Length: 456
Image (tube, rainbow, N blue to C red; front, side, top):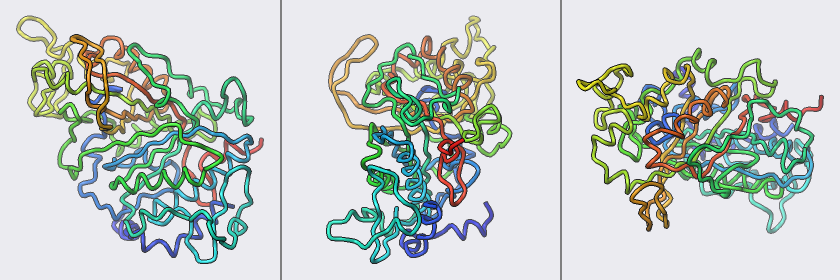
């Protein structure tokens, strides 16, 4: 981005309220791979200086929020569709796209113009254009809930994904889209150790809002849920956070280890094309998109905290404080998985987390990790491993999110072996998540996933 573009993007939320109405009108017409030891992007891709007044672009070839440098907060929501007609879903995505584009610039979800009110999308497809607005009446639904008025954009991004339920649910082709389900949108296998909870698993449409202000991220999802009333309802949500280090060093996860050292660089377009963006093998609406795998991974922090540092390092495969590979001094030193100690044992244990997750041990498979730590308080828990403690423990861990060109050669390939023998498994439990197809980006006047809904 040029300095001139950055200047144009600097604007407060209040400053955009009067000028964004035309945008909506146009639109209306696991671990390493998967554990807490690998949740976030590598430090070179974190902005050197965070400025919450910046806006991230919404329109473009790819959806924002995938290779965007990670923001400090996420609010991830998954919706179930209750619509009965395909046109209702298309209209929902029109309204959501317009609202998302406005909110990422700092504007309200819909215009606040005096004498106008938004027409809800609930129940049936609605007309487009200026007819979307009527004279307000007492008790009308507000155009925006208002808690973000006066706040800057905070680099808000909103990324949409489609789950298998959009295509087929309970054996039914609800919207005539079953034949358009991409082959890569598979049902995730049940991995060894999974304890998935239905209330945190699956769903028809995913929405990941990320921002450098938690209130901005929540506000964005809240508006979409409100605008989708009667067509989509929330199935599950997950909040997450990252430390704000200003790009000076790699962030640490809740296990205390540097996190994301060997992640793909979003600054490498060749790597993105090879591992992240769907190519000509996908349907037209997915080319330039990506597949999102989300996993809610609870970490037994009390159990982890009782382990000696040397054992923690053997489990992860890195030194805790420097972040260097075992036997090395610097964080970004290359791994030597063939190295042995004086007794002939591997310096990096055969079942260490980083060895099992490495591209060198997975036929070159790689994914773009974009996860967040989470802390949802405490609850009663029975630990998976000896001494099988039971009691009130932290409900905290990693909300793992990754993007890839094909989950069959990405997350699934990497995690199948890790789920069986990773030393990290005695401290982590996968309790929820899903797989979603994130379409390519949209241009002004279009909506996300538009080609999927067009009649052939």
